[in-house]
Image (cartoon, rainbow, N blue to C red; front, side):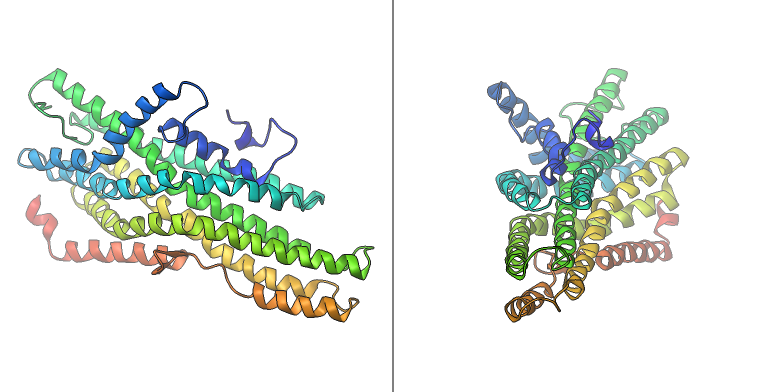
Amino acid sequence: MFDLVKGRGRSVFASRDAVIYLFNTFRFVGLNPPPHCRLLYYFYGSIITLFVVLLSPLIFNVGWIRDRNILSVMEILNCVQAALNVIGVPIKSITLALSLGRLRSVEPLLSKLDARYTEPEDLAKIRACAITGNRIVFGYIISYMMYETLTVVTALLGGHAPLTLYIPFVDWHRSAWEYWLQSSFDGAMLFFLLFHQILNDSYPAVYIYIIRTQVQLLANRVRRLGTGNKSQEQTYHELQDCIITHQEILRLVSVVEPIISLTLFVQFFIAAAILGTTMINIFIFADFATRIASGAYMFCVLLQTFPTCFYATHLQSDCEQLSMSIFHCNWLSQGKRFNTMLLYFLHRSQADIPLFALKLVPINLSTNVSIAKFSFTLYTFIQKMGVGKNLK
């Protein structure tokens, strides 16, 4: 199970192996049918999709609104901070489910790109890409399940429901069996919802990391042009192949970028409100146990956008390194035809690979920091108004 995370179990790795854990998670949540038992799997997937994706905004909000008069402010904020995140789940999950074919379609292209590299250092980079892609997904699973555990355990220790999700005709304050039914339902819903969030939040980071690896491999290849024992004609044809490789990388970006654009815009849109609400809960209303669970939740909210923004920022640096690598190749010993084509490649490679959320918000660390700053400003504003003192 953990061979891909540890880099064991196979001698040859490919870039497409970086998405194995990702698509295994798709299968777990009912979106990637296996070759056998498809009818039973479709029933399983439809139940999860109905409750976790389609009905979750309703289920997460009706419960606490119904019981708002008997819940404490801390319990209400626990529900609100989770409900805010759930609002974007239908858009993100449906977009991702409809785009599975597009994401799968890049795997033959990745195999074609990998086939061009035979040097040991290049193969080592491809191996690192395959391992890191699966580690990203595994890291999300560990982090989100930590939040699940803390939320359920602290709620049980405090004698209240984890999320107070809506169950018709059930009032967990009324009897012990209703309390345990409510807690079990909350835990199960949160479990499958978090796995949907793992998919929504990890796939952009995985695919951007794969693109980064291909850009780095191309930069190393361009840097080696003219340094071997090849003739000028062979070096010229290799430069042509480098230009084709660059075009294929851009085609890879054109397939993945529209999917990332929509799902990440939704997350950017709601992240500041989630962080602001969570900070209000932690610093004003929450008890010690709830502060630990809310702190884990706040870490997970930051994790929803940070890795993607981090890799997107470094992708721009990799594109700059690709342009710089052209100057490090042995172009002086090549002919005029080679140098003319090299100038064309230099012009094309200087254009960055643009990544925007819905063509409006740049996907980079600056945007991520701006969201965190805005959420802190929101918290400070509410604190200065004395809302906490009035509600306690």
